[in-house]
Length: 450
Ligand SMILES: NC(=O)C1=CN([C@@H]2O[C@H](COP(=O)(O)OP(=O)(O)OC[C@H]3O[C@@H](n4cnc5c(N)ncnc54)[C@H](OP(=O)(O)O)[C@@H]3O)[C@@H](O)[C@H]2O)C=CC1
Ligand SMILES: O=C(O)CCC(=O)C(=O)O
Image 1 (tube, rainbow, N blue to C red):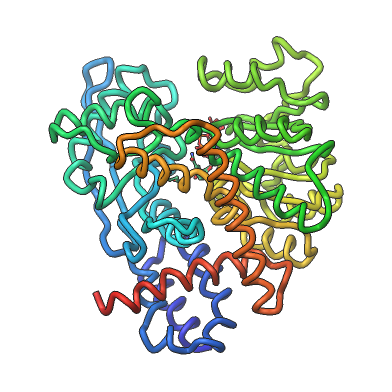
Image 2: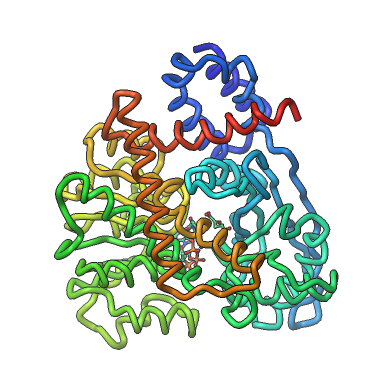
């Protein structure tokens, strides 16, 4: 199919250093080949050339003062990728590894993820190369205020609604919101993930992790299995990992690992969730401190596997939940998981498996839920927060959780039905990409050449 090949070639030339974006685009476009055979009109409308090009990219300088009185400078980004289905929606990532390519890949994935939710939200993403680690509360606040001093010009409750991602949680959303309010004088739903007393939705903090577990449950139910009694591997120790672990316990499963950038924690009796929350949400400490209360657990420092593999994926289990970051799970890790009998993978993180790892899972025909489907519960609940803000309401947990369950079941059904329609019933990557693309592409055609 020359169109797919040519578009990828052009991207390779026009985005030379954006390897993660290229990886994400290649996966989506390769999955679309059977769709174009069946529906060539998408090619006549040049949808693939248009969909890989962001509608707008904003890059800006952030100057802030550290606790020693020195002026620090960081880069800020917001990408407004596609608004065919609604206002741009997607998180902000603060991490030293962030480049324009990182934000571009995340924004691209967000288009299809948001489409799969069935809610009226377009795709966007943003962030900075600012490193929150080791910074005081005052430094975090001054950085967030400086970041918002530029961002506020580009966002609004009906244009672009940012939220959290790596390095951006409730504390940062609070400082960002305060500065938006100061600059604009408006109290409105311009960010999601807000505090529950000032416009936040009950259940948003938990939603990405809970949603990834609901997605796993949907995949297992289709196979006549359940999560109850299963041993589970979780990577990461942040927002998504913590609430994945919480929901796994509620489902009667046993999560035995979590990890951070320094290493992996393995507690064969099950991770002590209260202690994990205290270490990560309150003290912002390293996982090693867990051993002070649980000396029988093991801590494996990162770098143990010289070929780039990760200890968290080398432990015998039934299901795995990658919840840390992109490309954290390599082909060797995938093989180790398969060799150890893992038959269900639900991705809480965005693009955590390398392309080769995804191929191994698809070849093995295990239950594999790609991030853009499995972790969509977070952004979906953000849209529920927007709906509550618009109507000046706050819904009870039961209502939010019921909707989240329904949305995740719907996403699973769409992915599975579309995979079936295109003759690969176990391939939810194909199903997610075609189902998400079709919604956005149809809306783009309806709205003309803009
Ligand atoms: N928050 C949300 O609602 C959503 C998040 N996601 C995705 O989920 C993933 C996790 O996000 P979230 O939990 O919010 O972020 P947090 O910042 O809360 O946690 C991130 C976790 O991942 C670890 N981590 C980050 N980068 C690396 C790295 N390069 N190597 C090893 N470990 C790393 C961190 O360890 P350390 O603290 O040591 O850096 C930390 O434990 C990301 O891929 C994000 O895009 C997807 C959908 C929604
Ligand atoms: O809640 C949101 O708006 C976005 C969450 C997010 O960044 C993601 O889905 O990757």
